Image (cartoon, rainbow, N blue to C red):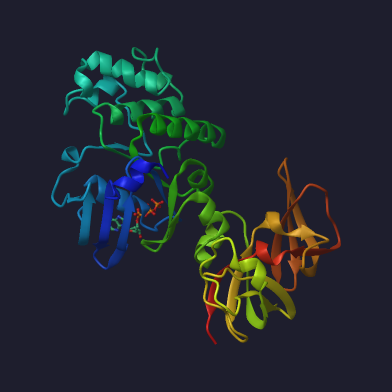
Length: 380
Ligand code: ATP
């Protein structure tokens, strides 16, 4: 991370034990998290998990039932949205149809002077440049594509120079191709301004593509807050493993524990290594097969008889190979262009694999122990 982030670790936006109830329904459940200065932070999760409510609490459209929202370390309790220095863009861009594009952007300046001592017109031109619509000022919003309209909505939200940008599913009304293009532009605009941004989406792929960090939410609270790679490669819970991308999740019982390589593990600053050497792989009985799984040394060491849940991403399942292997039957295949996503039946479960070559019939499929990620150990 950049040095500036290390130097001052007061989060730009912070939720501290925040709960929001509507009657008996708990929309946001005791959430504590911090968004760093300049960070692109995404709330992702299925419908109803509390993403929008969390964003509305940050914006000030809602006040928490319990807990505190802070900006730069200061509580914003009771501070109305227009005094929070936030720019907000919603799903339905809602540009004013009777105003030109330029007038729409200028509307963002009705409640605040343009920053940097420029005139309103200069500021509008700056913003239209930023969102890559330099010649659109006199156009009618309805003559623009959905993606262009959404960029105008961003320009309007950014016009007063807010400290924080809040985006609630800004692309969900657009088709898939346009969404992919727009997310690159949104990220570029955000990076150019270095503005702290909180983004809401239900689209996990979009979340991985666009964010510095992601909060994967379920039932009103994040299950994991981490960079996209970590969320993908090392999901903290079964929910995260299954919500983010394709995954193969296995649950079984530990059948044996194998000591690790003591010489190999001790060097390289792996401080958790004790004298006796940590167990490195465990055999897990899953539906009558023993599958070997590497256990990270920073985890509690599983013992024989413990329940263990682990996952293997489809791209780590290999046809014909792998130390842990099973026989499975090809059930269906979807040709995706670059790869084919194949569903295999193994016992009563489905395994997802990605391959380049067509598959059929019975296959051996396997993985290396270190390509499995342990999600949970349940002590016997
Ligand atoms: P979606 O992606 O469908 O918008 P979300 O993750 O943004 O979902 P929220 O809109 O924050 O979820 O809603 C979280 C929960 O709180 C839901 O069960 C919802 O029905 C409830 N809820 C949200 N706003 C209100 C409200 N004003 N009154 C009553 N219940 C509400």
